[in-house]
Image 1: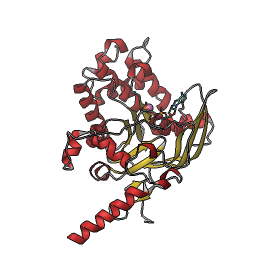
Image 2: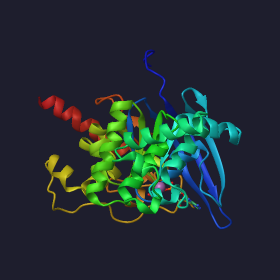
Image 3: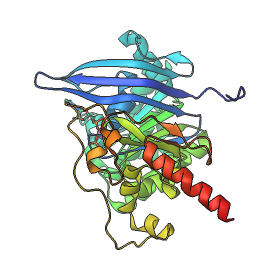
Amino acid sequence: MNKLKKEPLFKVKDLVIDLYTEQVSVRAVDSVNLEVNAGEILAVVGESGSGKTVMTLGPLGLLPEGVSVDIRGQSQCSGQDLLNKPARELAKLRGENFGIIFQDPISALNPMKKVGPQLASQAVRLRGVSKQQGKEIAIELLQRTGIPDPEDRYNRYPHEMSGGMLQRVMIALALVGNPKILIADEPITALDATVQAQILELLKDIQCRENIAIILITHDISVVAQMADQVAVLYAGRIAEYGTMEDVLTRPVHPYTKGLLSSVPDLRSKRGENASGPAGITGSPPDQSSLLPGCRFVERCPVAQTFCSKFRPPLEVLPHLSQRHFVACPVAVESTIEQMEGEAYEQ
Ligand SMILES: Nc1ncnc2c1ncn2[C@@H]1O[C@H](COP(=O)(O)OP(=O)(O)OP(=O)(O)O)[C@@H](O)[C@H]1O
Ligand code: NI
């Protein structure tokens, strides 16, 4: 262990989140470990229902409504424990450290109030400033997020603004408390293509200019390629593969990651694969309310062995590559190591 290794800004360790409704109980997050360093973008990818939102927002006390939740493990931000905190203390820590950008800005804003005053009152609440200072902060934030004529826009109602402008307001709202980390849950899904690119550019800009870390939840691999420093691939509540964007996208090891990437033609041709051949993953994710002991991908996996359905695959680090490439598939790890040794021998 490198003694000089910095403490990550945010980390979860052995995180387990069970959700209970009257009908079912679901293990939405199953022993997940993750770290986010200051100023870094971590992309969390995976199919719908894989646990991206619950895993990211759960440790902050933001859990789905109408379900009982059991959350275990550790979660820390700036060295402070987030789990087992009274709700008020957790809300305070959340306000000081995190800004959250939701997929649908309309649902996060009050439709009856002008956007500027919504930002200003949030500034009063989170920063303890006067009303006048709150207004100044709001206008500055509108400017910072690329909203033209911020003084005029201050007095607009949400319905008077376009989707892209509203998403900028949403980002401004997330920045009010001077967060160290932004959590962006599918921030561009509701927008059209040109606006999507602009919002991604704004997020990248915020990360670079202001050294704010971003946890970016997405199912779009091209967004990952464009934005991320680190990537965590989630499958049915567990991490399948985790590492730098370069490692995970250009040297994927887990069969699930490979399947996910094979549906992206650009990446396939980059790796010299035939972009028009069969792609993607067949079948559907397992029912998380009746989980068997082994690997959760086993039924859809092209390289599965008999032992895969018996034992949970550990998240192993690949020794030959960067020390931050983790894969939860002993079959794929072994064949990758063999292949790398073969290539080294040939050279
Ligand atoms: N309100 C809820 N009631 C019951 N189960 C829920 C609820 N919210 C989430 N779950 C379950 O928790 C698991 C993880 O859900 P989560 O919303 O984190 O997935 P996700 O990866 O964010 O999906 P999406 O891409 O659709 O947003 C899923 O299996 C889902 O069925
Ligand atoms: Ni989600």
